[in-house]
Length: 393
Length: 153
Ligand SMILES: [Zn+2]
Image (cartoon, rainbow over all chains, first blue to last red; front, top):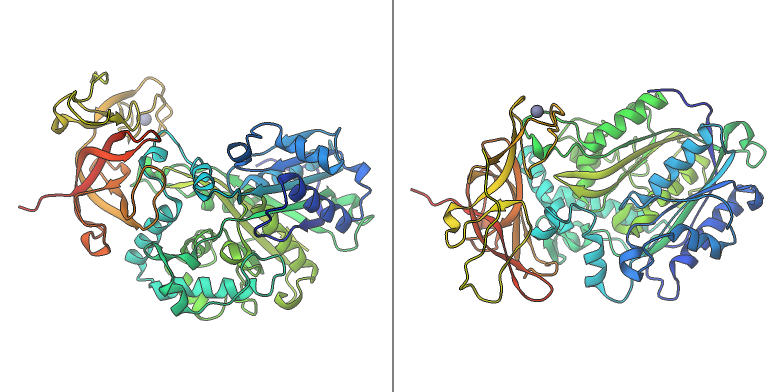
């Protein structure tokens, strides 16, 4: 890897509540998130020099296929600057964050805005499902009955077969994340569930029941980034972007006996190399639990434990808010919600406020290093996009 | 090996059956038993891929990929009994991943058994078939590849 020309900080974060917003468009969601981040940063918005906008499927839902970022920024009053659109499935806004980080790290810009927004409630669930199903190779998997819960169910079933993990242990992820989500005012689903309720809920694709699935939702999330050397002019507690690792899948289905690393393993390796920290240094993480069993497999691929050990970590309380490596303190995608284009920056929002000590009832004790793992799309047995951000106080 | 991929469907099938996709499989008219998935094998490094590609993802050679007929038997890597169905499918339906001897993992619909958890188990022998796997928006049957539990002898 090369070396960054300079370091970058996050000085502002903002997000809308996640959930059903029938009275709001993508313009409203993006504007509210962007201005919340601006207010949080203390930056004069006239000083924002460049903007990155992450959105996944608005084009298929409303017809606004192109210049989505420019359209929402016009409404937000932030026209004129370069706007780069970063549609990348469920990792669209993590991609926006990465581009903002690189733009400042290059030395070209001092202050950037990254924003993610998604409106999935359009009064037609089948239409939304069809749009989300394009986050694959539509020519291959897309025509063959690809169904995202089913794709995760296959991996979960294989994981259970290989490691002995039980359905009850998977349900415990759902229980933990819903409990955390109850403490998050931005979360879409704020009620606790029991293992029995999770297991007895409507079966979607065994072992995945309804409560283990991230819900359809609307939302926006944003961050203001600036060069580290000027960050203290705006806030006394800037959060350092120590690294963003990114990978696309190697699509290991093409050669299943070669020990090809997964996109999570590749992105994590890159982020650890750039930042100089390892999994043992991480104090909390947001993991892409679009479906609960994935929290275990991604936790292991991130290097927090060996394969097959994640359920034991959870059962020992290590991934609880009070544990040694709290996971998904925000409620995870199952409880906080998953308006896909906003998800990555909402995960960043959680880690930033945790590192600042502003997470209230779900505050982790004195964290210094946080990790965000945000993936998108599925092609050939792996995520199409994977981002791993490492943030430091 | 040079394969003929231009083909026609059986003329007497109902409601204008169409192929789910072009270029993924060869299906001779009137003789689905002779059908096969079209993969590519690298003459330099031996890697086999599906769907076929021009560039070998193993050694990056651009001239070495040759079309190959993939095996029609494999073992079940995993499966999912889906209780909710996307457009064109009817719940419950099964999808699975089957590992072929060429070390290629194929995602496909699973047929030929009840859509229950007990009907399948990881590691079992599977056999590829061609049949209607779904419908397009106009209601036309879509013919594609599927796997079913192999006949036990
Ligand atoms: Zn090769």
